[in-house]
Length: 196
Image (cartoon, rainbow, N blue to C red; front, side, top):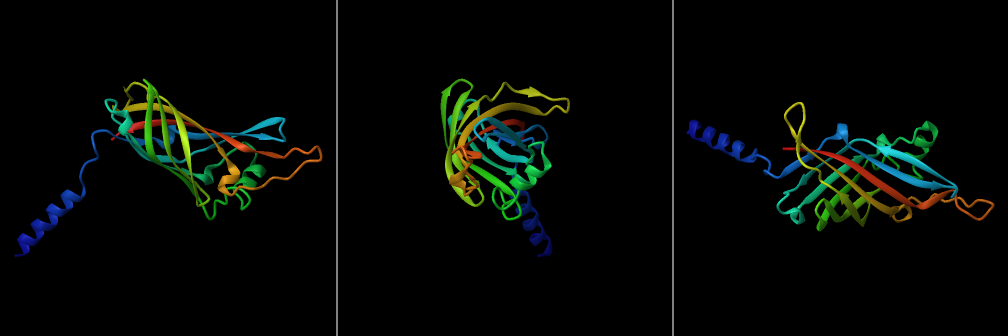
């Protein structure tokens, strides 16, 4: 009886550890980042990056429209090159990283525009607020093997969001009538994928 029970447990364990689908890819966080730009006082552009990009993509080159994306970005990695500004952006008026340490994206549909060009519609969650966005994709590239014999592809995605829609309302008005920080934020994702 004990041997039979042990066999059942072993079988259940094997089934619970099913291999990833053949068309499954994971984001390489060491070679991926999210970049953003925002206008400052309407006269200059501030650029910043987030590291800690992780996630899983189901992608089959023969049927790209069936692709799916689930990804997270570590908001605590925010870096604009100016420590004081970075601390402000991580604070309650902006990303409030103590409460919301990650932003999330989950795709809903994929539209193939042409070879190497797609649009991915999905839900982006920042500060616990979820809005639909459309990512314009350039890629994926052709597959290559790295020095560790892993199969990789690269992809670049761009979009633009309204920060106010995500509850980031900081908006002091200047004497000239303009605002200190624009509402529109441009986002570029440079992603490297490893085949599972």
